[in-house]
Image (cartoon, rainbow, N blue to C red; front, side, top):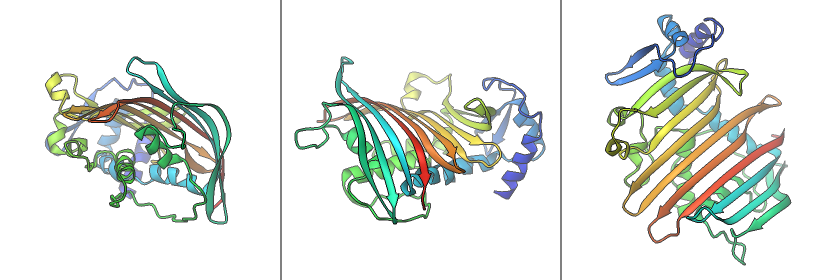
Length: 320
């Protein structure tokens, strides 16, 4: 990491981020045998001065800053708004929830209440149980049921399935995807296709590294993974991740955002999902502030679930 920070400092001193389009590829960097990363001219200059691209590959897979930002929510008061919509195959609204919730944290415990609800129909049955697996997953991640006292400040991105319920196991695999992209996911017929940096999957992707400004103002680096434009449809069908963009803050390598598109179809299951997550710094603490999900998926013997989730998180007060 020290070597990486030194090389980052070299990059910052170069041209103070001259304006170059992310699509303007002027050179490439050979990584191992078939791994080629396309660079813009500023990054090319930095490579010539000792900038280490390999470290960024490792950083993307092992970074803990993104997970730490989410974990900061556990020890904070905050508000969050939910705008959740489910659709029929004909694109008609079948269920909707719009609410503002508040999480409290005090004396090493956290709990949640609903501050207001503007719309709520078609998602829960008469007993209050969700009609949708996607909603169950969302609640597992963001809704706090009752009083929870579980102060665990450790950050460990080596998520392991606990052998619990289906929801808990899928939640674990979802965490791998979000916090450690490129890892093997424990889902049959899909797992190894998620390893986008492996020799088997490299032939399907272009990798690029360029400078940008996050939210138009924060100097950042973007590591982008996209399907090769030359792929035939039959080759595209062998991939799950269609694109993955990771934004790093330039001065401290904090991951600021991730954008994913996943799409795959095989007997018994198909899905097409976009996930965008943005972080922000509040009172010197990083938090996720915007989460967007758009998904269309179907599992054999289950009804198709088409939905969008928009979550905004704000009014943070870190209390650990």
